[in-house]
Length: 368
Ligand code: SAM
Ligand code: DTB
Ligand code: SF4
Image (cartoon, rainbow, N blue to C red; front, side, top):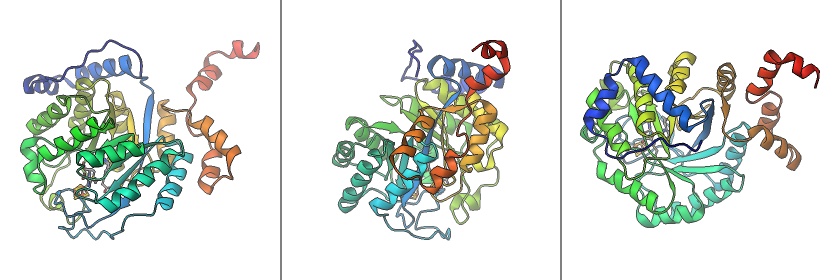
């Protein structure tokens, strides 16, 4: 992040946000990109990899979710993973270039015995030198402190949509419960990751209300995942929704999130499988600077890592940390895994400086 004077505020009115939605598309994107490059390096993305550590049989009724036990989605139940399995999977993600490991569990909230295991996971993954994130459902004050003490960097808990539309999507927990969990996470000193889903049949008014909630939190979330609904067969939303959200409306969401929360990482999250490269490039141009990297989200597919690296290369985008250096160190420290060998054998990320020199400064290079 650059040191800059862009101001932030936490009292965005509905009308101010509605006015942003009404801007001509080019004016909106220009405004978002201008803010984006003031605050961030516009050619860098932050990469997080997801792992579902406990899958399915969730008692909640989120109308979009493959993991709710209320719907027949054909998902195979998997109990909480062993700590060592999680660490092995995190190592592979790191070897492929990921910076943050996000572990998700299909719980309403974690139980006491779960906390012992998940805190051990946090410690194990951190010991690899990765940032850690978890999404385990609602947390009380003590659970948030326990995770913070274990060293958890980020906690993901989404507001999902506007307070008004929320009741159509989830009945088993309240909007206020979500706000309370975010408060506990902040109070415990962890970074907040909170966003939501678009394309669930919500109106423009709901999208405005949703962004207003996020932007008027006491502190803007460090990460704001904007998910496009992944339609899951057997869920209520699969049965009732006919139309996908308009692509430009989705890009507007990204741009407005960038404008409202200039210092937050805006994550282009679920739904990339159905987006072409041009749409993703537009999302980066509108201010998205983070994504889920790895061929699996929680229970659904995500673009393959090699496909993403190709896209980054075509766009001149690099990742935030010194992944290539880290790979070099790992190669000396321990025997390389199959994934490491595969990923080291190709150039992980495009090096814009090298290419610039090759094409623009041949004379200078020749004289050394
Ligand atoms: N069970 C925990 C909870 O809900 O708090 C954590 C996991 S839950 C799967 C995390 C988030 O993933 C949800 O809040 C939702 O925003 C997103 N998500 C889940 N299913 C999705 C889908 N089919 N399409 C898009 N986003 C989805
Ligand atoms: C978030 O906002 N999106 C991620 C993460 N937080 C946990 C989850 C997306 C899930 C997509 C559907 C699935 O794979 O089950
Ligand atoms: Fe359970 Fe989370 Fe899915 Fe809701 S989103 S059903 S809480 S796993």
